[in-house]
Length: 397
Image 1 (cartoon, rainbow, N blue to C red):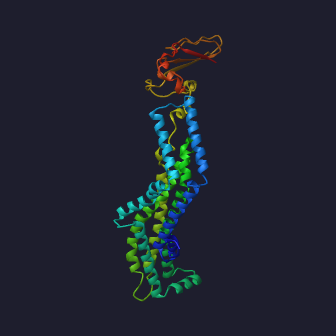
Image 2: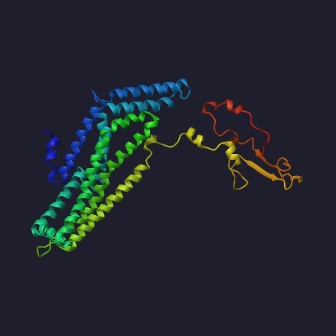
Image 3: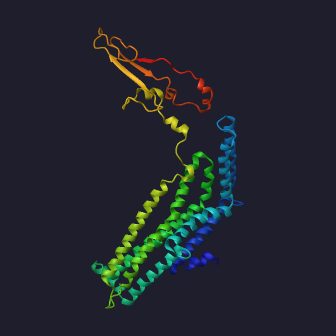
């Protein structure tokens, strides 16, 4: 029998043994999954070889077509990405030392610093939960009201102090052990399939999946940190309440039972709020630029073209901002076919019978007069000698 099997056999004896069993099984499962995926005889090793070949081929094609160039600024990010992917996708030692230890050990260490505990803060918190439930069970057995209260509540439909006490204990169990075990199992699953998402970081189109995987790992990793920190405050509130559960007549105090139920309900609400806050915080993380904003080319593609900007209405002061194309549009419409329309105060004359003439004057010295969308390869010294429009452009309709 292995060590994990022994811990799993003793998992039903308390909260702390259950968490130790879950940690051991999670580590063992993650190591086995890594070996089956990218180990010596891994099932995805041929797929990794094919993806690396495609990565090199795409880079060579970009060099041949002039979309990329040989230089430090172009080669350094690609070589670093290739090296990190090969390291974490093919070496369990590197993956365990960096990813696993950071996801499991770093939040626990921070929780130990915050709570002032010596050792694992999660295990100490689990031991305190075992002490709380042992005290509740002792109160129920010494008063002899657990079975009788359950029967009375079932027949009359009212809450007895014993029923309220056990209901509060159940809520407390779900809000502490349930969240800790769920977060640890979810983290183990994410780390088990992690090498697949590490390989997907090679290509731009699939880096969003890697960013989403990292967000999920961070969310499930820091969940125990908040549970232990917030649960420590709840445990301090429960100590006097549990001491007051046993009344002087050998019965369960109703006020203390209601206080226990109230504290357990507040703890459930606190854990729900913490889950939402962690989700909001992690969703705003840009993940080291893996799924960042749009590139300059994409931003210029969404920018309006020069004719569209010319026809758009403008509002504001007479002084235009720097770099914005200055346009003055005049509309003149004849009242009658024989009438003459006077020309505007400034600008070229506009007079047509029965027609509407639009005269747009463009400042040829403004940088925005150039096309908004221009090929990057055409930019350089030659663009300085590009001809500039020097006369007014007239459009009739």
